[in-house]
Length: 606
Image (cartoon, rainbow, N blue to C red; front, top):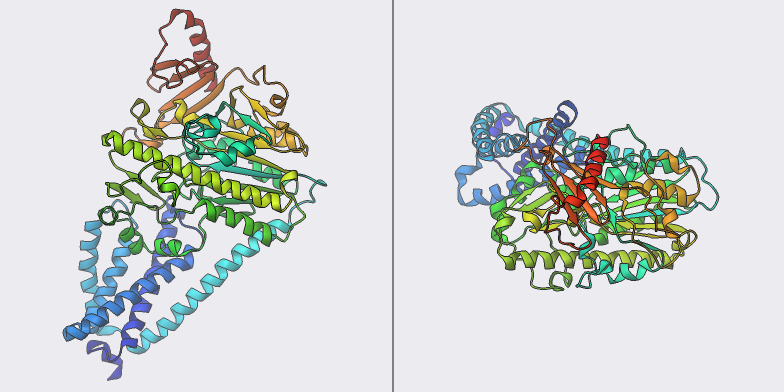
């Protein structure tokens, strides 16, 4: 009987590929269900956008059809493989392995062994029961579902954005635009704008002359999530919910949603999709938020199997490719912003745009010619860990001095690339005659360590290489050209400053102080201290139990920086006379009164 042909041999390549396509689509649909359970039932971030509802099936469709083509080729040499049971077993193995790999607590080799055992049972049973007519019917139904999901998802994303724009109130006449450019992981000390010996930022150096350059801007935190939360809400890390796996909640208004209330069109273009994607809560208030953009790389990581394969550390080391698969370049971020400007139906509205650049983040892999601009390229055959949205080198503390210098040269090259791309963007906005009525803010969330005090990368300490960040503000109508502000300030003051400069509402909507008065007189500090802090527990789960607190705090009061660790240990540095912070002067008697005052201020922060 024809209805039992699956127990015999495939009569055509089409039959085999149809079975492969059906298997891939069904595997993708179930993968989405499992991801949904992880996200909505267990509260885990999946680091995948809304398009995963159709991209998982599309990616698995391509993967399984490719596997089917390989199997068909092998069948020509080994006819025994033409048994449908063999094909069903292989496709079942791929599907089950993909589902099990979604659960990181199951070791990958255990997932493969378990998938193999289940696949044998599934293949045997389906081969006895499945009919060709059923496969064709399921193929048509699954394809229709894929098309409907893709069209529905894209339609919903477009409709929701248009609805948000239509609900905006009328803006104030001639209200200025706001452009916030955040260079992820770019410390001030590596910028020639701040006296660095390498010419890393010639474009920004020139641009700074058109407005104000802050010599001592201090981040509220040494890593991305709480630092961005501070820039958006004006609050310190201990006041907001942002942490490693905790999003920014709705306790405090954000700059984006507040500007929306004044009629601003809002857009965010994000390259750091590990920490700044929509699941971080930083998207609140943005009508358009471009984080997980549709692309070939996003399609690849939409399949659990493909994602695991491309993140294989031994494979990456063997081929010498340590790049984050989905990393978006500054060129792409700029183009995304310009496309939004061109396509926005609300051309007459002022806008608030947030551009997050990720090019200087580890791994440091700037494009040519910036990869060799300051020295030899980084040898990329090192041991590293690759996850969705990140890649980091193992045992950086064991690098040779030459390897560490090569990493620094590549990092500086990445900053130089960023400088060029930001310069090109500003030139384009100048060509469009938009800069005259735009408040441009250029800053960073934190810096980077290259062995100082035994630390590498960022997040685990509060020394100035991480906290001292660039800050430029240019707005010809309110900010005098060639302004240089030496007073130490906190990035938490940005929201209040924006509202003061725009003149559209009360700056008191946000905590912190407006920096505008410093443009004319910076002889008196706005606040007596500048606070920064970090809770190490979420960053180091291997060292601290769940829900533990290991809060380290820093206070900058020129010329001193005071650091208090979670265990009570303290350090004090004079960063004017000791910019590299090598001499802890905590035991100097003449500073006892100052130290007691700083301790009290840290206690008040709680």
